[in-house]
Image (cartoon, rainbow, N blue to C red; front, side):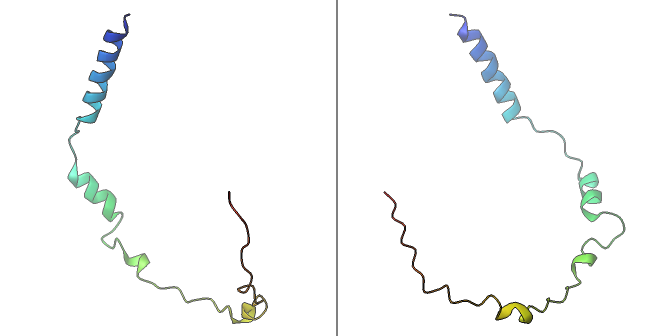
Length: 74
């Protein structure tokens, strides 16, 4: 006995946490998302050149596709 009060308190706390909605500061959120300056996505616009992997293409091109996985499960 005595579990009822403890469970009721835990339920009340869980409900308070679940439905708690703090005030949102949208101007602070906007400042955080834009960051310093007005160009938020300028550094993502530059595409880096693709590295040339042609030197490694034939070195590791062993024909492993023909092997069948013969593990049995169960």
